[in-house]
Image (cartoon, rainbow, N blue to C red; front, side):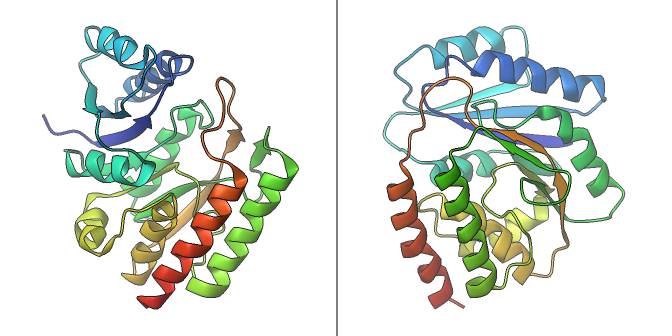
Length: 237
């Protein structure tokens, strides 16, 4: 089948979120006549995440489960998902209900009308809402975005949010130049898209920090990884 959208959703122990997210996402896309596949890349969940997904697959054939037991990490999960995607457009979102699927039709419409090649759901532009995140974490994220602009020259205001849709040809163009290590790859995708002269647009979204479960990365871990990897990207310029 020719899908319009392939949406990649990495998971690890998301039993409290995944059913609600998949049902809502599928309903939004179906109600807007958007053919789609929901590619769930699961990193060895030890709770009921996989069981819930397999149950949903019986009712929603658009759900694809890619189980991984010997790999970990958001970056490699996205690579695995995109490399298995069959859609005209590729996208990603988090599994923890931080991203509202209601924005997907608007993002796709921008691409379909050829107003852009890459659409980011942004937390840092006018009319966006960013709630639930501790002040220090939000401050660290904002400082990180400033450094990305200064060091890499990326003009988008929110490169680290994993809520975006882009043309398939962007992935085909940049995938061999990516170094999928750490969450910085989310930014690296935007950087390489801009470097290859693809048009990038941001739309305001409502971002709500995790509603169920605990954060899997500390601010210290993220900060150390950020500085290590941002300069790795810079050295390749």
